Length: 54
Image 1 (cartoon, rainbow, N blue to C red):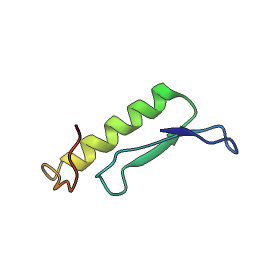
Image 2 (image 1 turned 90 degrees about the horizontal axis):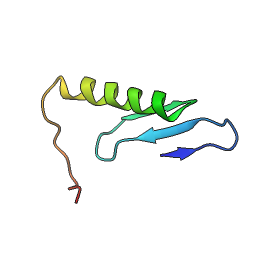
Image 3 (image 1 turned 45 degrees about the vertical axis):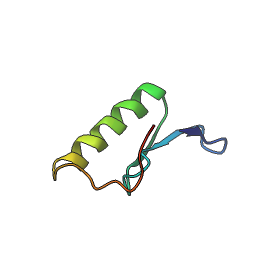
């Protein structure tokens, strides 16, 4: 996650999920959006990840 100095928006992404990113004005909104992105991606089943989180 990062906060853009030019827009003031928080930007978040989910590593290993191509296209899984969003931006919002608050961290709560960003967190909710990322959860929705994950739900949509999991509709087709578990993703085939090429990395492992430790």
